[in-house]
Image (cartoon, rainbow, N blue to C red; front, side, top):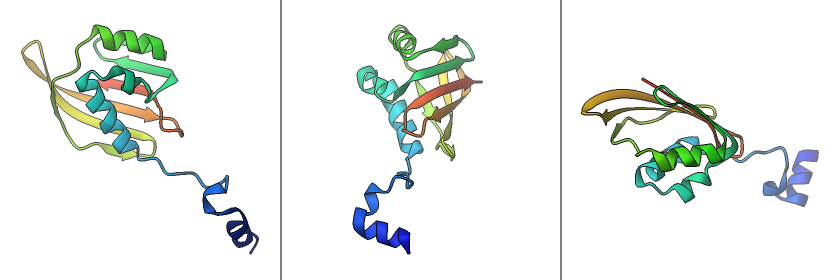
Length: 125
């Protein structure tokens, strides 16, 4: 009864304990699209300050600024991507990319904060 009272007094959107559900799949696809288009200023808005990249070929990159330098120095992947799968705040995208005239299957695991920022990406073959 108290919850109903609060609902009518304060309004549904103002209740602190109800979180907005994030569409992590849409955010991951937006990230991928911006990466391919080299729209890095907009892409960096999706990245958390505590960001970490673990790349099978390029090693580990820690921090938002270091990731921006990495993006500027490396071409985006050219390839095809399967439909992402979502498990909580983790999105997995599998794709086939062409690198050095070879097709590689890659797996991207993207982890989001509760606020919808990307905090971790693991790229494996």
